[in-house]
Length: 190
Image (cartoon, rainbow, N blue to C red):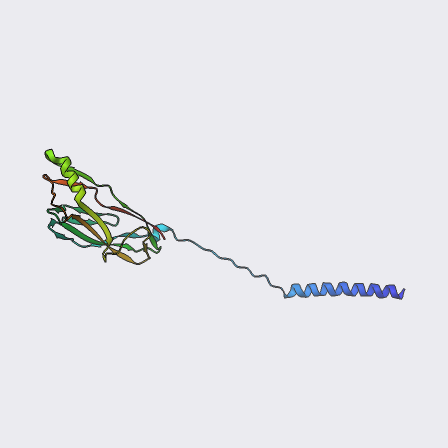
């Protein structure tokens, strides 16, 4: 029987040791928690891509008209191209005052409408359509195209040139009005 008591004693001692080790481990353990509250700022308070200052324009053989500017629209009225080689140039800024980087998603050239006057209206409109141009670049002459990135707090100076070809001797007999001449710039989050 002493062997049986000895085995029982060893089994009880092992159980006590396991319980003791478990209690000691539990006494030395620590639970750590990470809790956070996060907010994402709305785009309406941090998105601010807009037109900024514009110059009064320069011209060669042309009446440069007038320019007006809002945050979302540049309007130029009264340009008159008077001879081959005539041109008008305006520069203005697109600025990103928001907190979000922007990228030019689409740059769409508008489809102009030409309307002549009098009996030669159609042929005059055709002559003008073949000889006028409108271009939009960066003021330094570099391309301004889709994918252009405008970081927060930065701006780009653009140049709009409206011109009549210097390589032609064709002028309309009557006046031709070109309307809807320009571009639409659509910026998105970069």
